[in-house]
Length: 211
Image 1: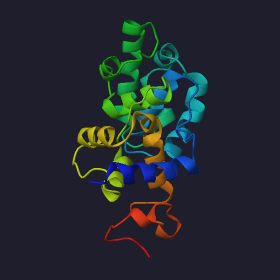
Image 2: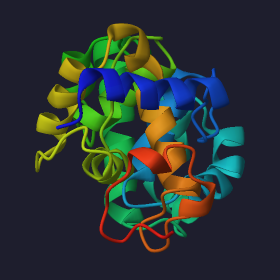
Image 3: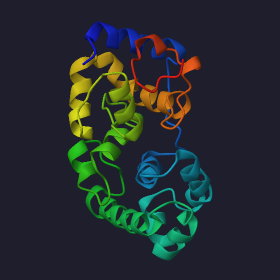
Image 4: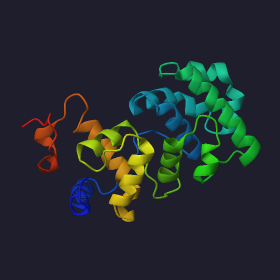
C-alpha cells in the first residue's frame, strides 16, 4: 500500500493540474444526473450524452419520463448497452420517485439505493456531484488506477472505497473520483497507458510501464 505522504503528493499533482474537476455526463438537474449515471453503467459518458441530448429535452423529470413511456424511452437510448434493462429500471425508479419522494431525488445513500437500478456507485455519484457530499464512487477506472498506484489492492469496489477513505484526507475525497476517472480515461488508459505524458510516472512501478 502507498504511504499517506506519497498518496497525498500524487493527489496534489492532480489537484494542481485540475483544481475543480467536473463530471463528464451531461445533466440539467438531480433527476437527469441520476438517469445519466444509471445509463452510464458499462457504457461511455460520450455515448450516454449523445443519447440523452434529445431524451432530456422531453423527459427531464420523473413525471415526464413516465408520460414518455417505456417504448419511447427505449427508442431514445437504444444505442446504449443493456438499454432494455436500463429503460425498465428508469421507468421503475421514476415511479418510485413520484410515489415516495414527491418527484424529488433524495439526498441520502440509503434512500437512493432503495430505487430500482441504483447501487452504491450510482448513489455516490449523485450525492457527490449534485448534493456536494464527500462521497467516493468506485468504478472500473478508479479500481484500475487504485491498483496501479498502490492506493489499494482490494478486489471489490466497496473495499477499495474504504481503503481510499482511510488513505486520503477528507478534503480530497470530493474530487478523488473525478481525478482518478479522468486520469484513467485520458492518460493511464487500460490498453495503452500514455506514460510519457503521465504527471505521476515517477510513482508508478507497474510492469507494463512505458518508458
